[in-house]
Image (cartoon, rainbow, N blue to C red; front, side, top):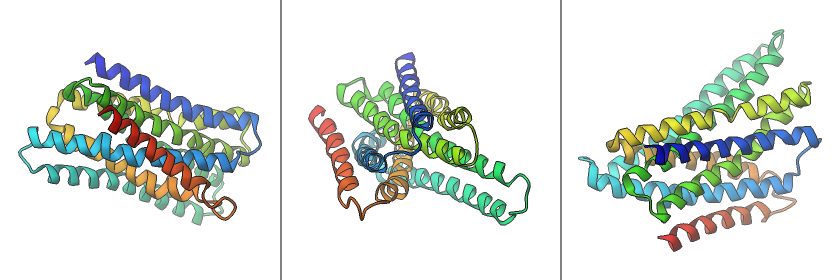
Length: 267
């Protein structure tokens, strides 16, 4: 068990570290370089989309064929949709709460509420991302410690880590604009990623002890990653498309190609 839980913990501590590094930019910079941020977001989106198939959905289907009494396509589809719905419901919950609070502009605690909801929205996204990494490493206990499987788990962690850097900055810089000190802005920015190691360990333990849930868990993780990549990362990295029309797009292509190269060549 330790052979998968410890790597899952280390990997998710790495994704949290990238959140902290992103949040730390508020200490040294007045604003982030949007061009390079867009490349990083695009690259992360490409990695996550490719990893969702080769490192999560494909193993989920293969595993479901051997351990599930249900058709493999059914398990993979239900898990994938549930993962996407989890992120969608989280987004809707935060958006609804934010809209109600913003409607009450006279509230003395409006500034606090805006800050709280900003941190909460990023934190909610980090939970399934931590689970995705934990599930990928936990799966090694059942699928074997092959180079292909291990590198698949590592690249999932890498993709999430890359997109965590701008997420940390996305929390700390708005807090700074709200009047918080650089130290507090950094603290709350990095704190939004602290749930990932916890979620990662939970995800790894779950698939270690309950082998039958592995296909569903892998598909669930794929659904969360695809929704985050398509709904958030790709639109965000295309935010200054007029100035640099293909900058972020090449980041997406490069991330996808690298992930595909690693998975196919090591397979």
